[in-house]
Length: 506
Image (cartoon, rainbow, N blue to C red; front, side):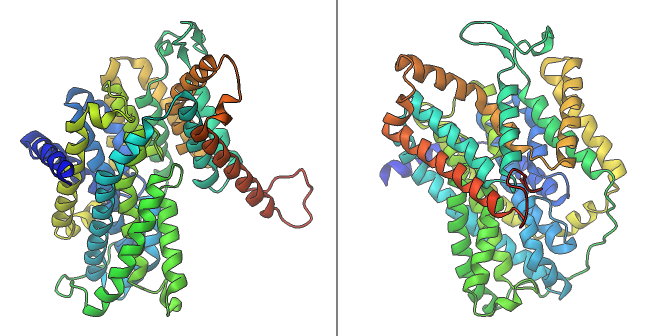
């Protein structure tokens, strides 16, 4: 306990500096804005702002990017409740009961209880980050090359098997990402691979161009033609406070949602989307009045919101202590750290204690800022939702081009981000998930390096991945996930289909 207090004091010295407070405030405020705007979300915003972080302190950069992430979770609920427009995929569950509450004239109650549920989930996740992450880091010190290879393989397969509806499409995107990740100069032999004589990719594809193209440009292209003619419902704040009955029903669901969110945040490949659906389904199953769900049940708002924000905090645990991101946002965070010369992994807490504990304390500060800002700014968010997309989207595209050009001052990078934007838009049309591609792209060098190292240490013995206990466990879990995905796909086949045919979802 004394060590934890001393570490928190160390983190407070970093997080309460004027510059860190500024970037924390800027991050969470911007996160709320992009969370409110349908079709934008925190991931494209983080990708677009990644070039700016190259010119500031690494700790403050991560504090700002993290603020955008969990700030976006808060903001996404606003559009879900007021307009039935989810700003992020997990916020779609909040629409189920949040929007009916707004239609009943209880929008103020829904927004207030959502802010409380988000705070509860975030606080639960922060406690786990501060207590569980150091323990996991000490355990990870036992990892060798074989263990890291198996863990990364498990994360990639987990993303494919759990994170999407189609296993075949997800795993194919992971394979594409792995291939894109090996473009450039081979670290071992120095040979150029898949460069096709293009000097601009001799050092590999830019993570910023890939992320901004697939998630930023493609989102603009996909949302530009969507009609946005809904107007916010008018409501007052005089009856904003929930009743005692609302609180009695909300508190238990907040706790259960926080627990589900924390578990899904730690597990690679699970993520917030799975957490909110599990939390919502569980509340509906155990409820004595399940018929009210979908008609304005307050548990249908508090459970997914607490799960969503708990996931946003605990997702940092595997990313920082193992160097393995659980979703696309954490993959971009991992890339940002690596660009700054910081290698996430078991040694991060010991080597960079100011960064880790400063980040933990900034979580507390950021969530406090979000609760203070969330309700008073609802009026501004509703007006922001009415900005014509014909004005908003050109500004976003201009910022993307300026950001990617500012990294290497190369016009080739602009063409690269446009190319990946077109690729990302095509993936959306064909329903190929982009997140597995980005995970595969970022983890590809680590996967290859540890694979080679493990075989060199074992003198080419492939059994080294099975005989090592920890590695064997992850290989077994990966095999189980593949079997689970295959069995699920087989069950989705319609009756009378040819045995070799695949269903549309596969």
